Image (cartoon, rainbow, N blue to C red; front, side):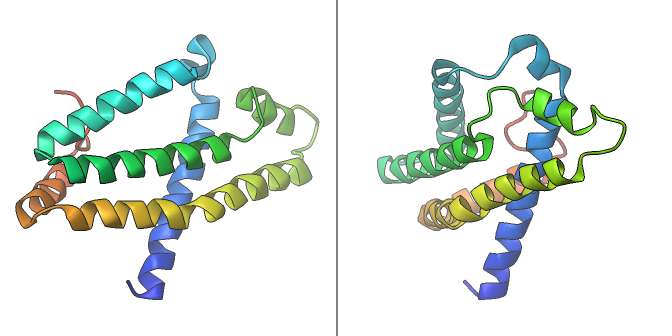
Length: 156
């Protein structure tokens, strides 16, 4: 993979994680139900792996690579969340005063960016290993599913 492609993919992936994290912090959904427990996360992960496996009709070697990818994504998510127990409170603290707390916001952003940069190469590598293990028909199915408006893991 060419360096500029790799950097672009890491940048896009990192930006999407930052935006997703900030969105999750401000969502009412999070506020009412709280963060996912380890058990709930394992349940969701199992469902996602099973759904991808069934949609793509994966063999055992491909399922193994998919599980490695899931492990890497989960490790990156854990690193991204960091030690915070309540990201909503962190975000509220930034705007709690009369002026926007630029230093605190920059520190939070730097922390999240470091987490993404540290784990992204492993995630990209695991994603590449999984995708490269797919046969051409499965790769085409992935491309087709990604073209759908709601995304390929959406219900209905």
